[in-house]
Image 1 (tube, rainbow, N blue to C red):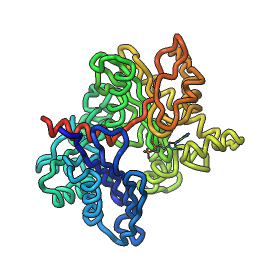
Image 2 (image 1 turned 45 degrees about the vertical axis):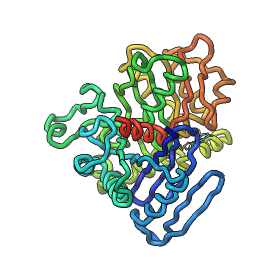
Image 3 (image 1 turned 90 degrees about the vertical axis):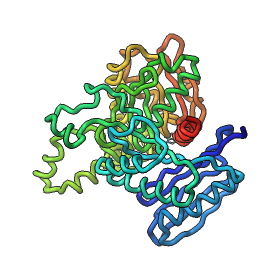
Length: 395
Ligand code: ADP
């Protein structure tokens, strides 16, 4: 059988990210992004091999941009597209694994839309459009939350009245599951430990950031909660704050719920602390040049990360390794170093040269002799979605 091709689609409210994954190739033959959909500035960018192209599509809808993307994918796949894998943010408690899309799955995604009102409806638009355009192609939905459905109740329940959970679904769900799952499997392969008898701390540090405790291939705890705002300080998200902050801001400043949501999700985190940027590269340069806000943002980010990882340690019976991934985790030797300086009780020691070497897609072990294992593992959510799609096609 020749190597199969899966188109991976991440359909957002005004954008569609896509990649063609060939099971035998490490790079994507085709990848791209359609953004500002529905506006006069809507545009489709894609890269096919070494060629980059763009197409202006004023006012275009999700459906019509997908009708442009799918033939591109067919062409890049040499006419042999085997399936489509869709990223879906919220599967609630309905979905503990990836699924072939059918009417029940569509209904399940719809039923969880109240938990991800910006994301799930957009995913449905993408899935339904792709099904209409390619009725004969199998479609699979892969949920960010599914991996964390193995958390025990003491990790996923909030200490609030029970009916809020039983009647309204108020609990911790966790996100970035596809990434934590991928990197923990890769880490086990890289060091030759069987996944089913392994134990990891994982830090996914991109624009959104989360930590995860993974035992025998299952999530046992994670730092994000009901929404992706809980936990670490992130690019523009505050992470944990005193829950009374909301009522405090409403009372003292007269802020609306929308204004509080916006501030905590879009104007906080690295951006809010530094007053400069949400981008760790920019911040680190400014920190080195003596910008006090950038230094504070860098320090808060690393300390909060260390504290979260230390807390996640409660869910592990042993430690096979601490994994860094995501744009910051894969590239910032300085964040890795500073974070581990706050975790002295764990005995982590970095090999400075190995730490500096792991950047721009280079992964590997970075601990000094005698230290618990520390790994940089480049994540690849698109590949994991394609692997799930292929596994369901084979089932
Ligand atoms: P997303 O969550 O949107 O997928 P990424 O995983 O690409 O984001 O991560 C983006 C973050 O990674 C940004 O804060 C960016 O500054 C950071 N990053 C990328 N390269 C480097 C680098 N060389 N050093 C420090 N941070 C980096």
